[in-house]
Image 1 (cartoon, rainbow, N blue to C red):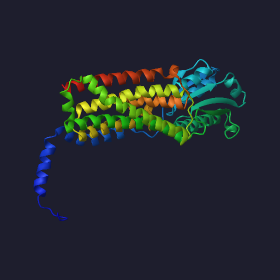
Image 2 (cartoon, one colour):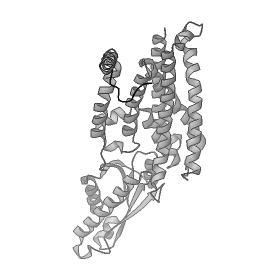
Image 3 (tube, one colour):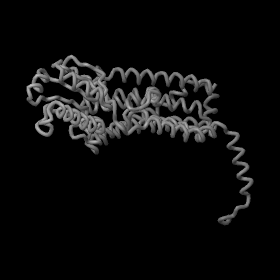
Image 4 (cartoon, rainbow, N blue to C red):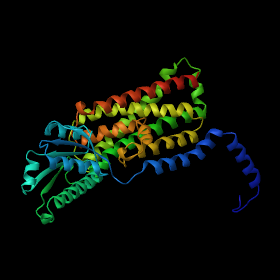
Length: 374
């Protein structure tokens, strides 16, 4: 019977373990590089200050006061006027397509009413699918309206204001945070489960030597790969159905768009996630390496995909890295269909990018898998 606190053999075991670590440089590099990588991503990507919100505007007045209002919005750090719409319908369409978060509507006779001393309404449409942006946009627009009203007529600086900002929150009028977070969680959970299952299953079989036994059979490399990943694709889709049902019936998040379209596109996302898992399994030599590589993918995926933090507020290099992550596009699809009622006409850029990236990952992973098993 072994006694507790018995330190005999400590030096020998320590030496053996050090030799093992040195002889596995991939695991050592992953273990040492991952904390630094995560720190850099956390430090550069995370910006809790919401600013430069993508904004569209419709100027039906073209008067001097309308120009001053738009200049004030441009000069602020909160708004970034990127689109000039030609109609109110286009303002709404730009928000549904997630091209902007805010839309400003300057009505006809706006300048004439203000100059005549009559309060004039300024319509501000806010995308309520992201409650943090909606709160900032609402407060900032009201503040700019109050400041301009005070400049134009100090006698009316309290009430009534000459520039009456009228916000209207779309899609999530109660600004319920669950409506924003739960759809995103579906994508995050699906990617985590799919990559872990695929990578660990294949690498585990390679460690046990059973993969080598399969390779000496007449099974082709593509048949072997498909046979390995299809069951995990089915498990991932069942997981998706489970979390999707929980979103509807437990968290009471309504779906504004087509559930059928979302189910079809979820299969496309599974393809991309399986490609990532297969790529990890073709590189990793052990389950420990596979777990470290999966963690190295998951944390940037959560931070750079827009799940928590607004991508427009990130440095450009972090935004570029986000485009290489399938979850980035699936989050836009999830929130577009569930919250904004978007269809293929609005989501086709994200759908095309996600499917193209998924196909690329599967091809690269298949080539590597064939080479490593030949």
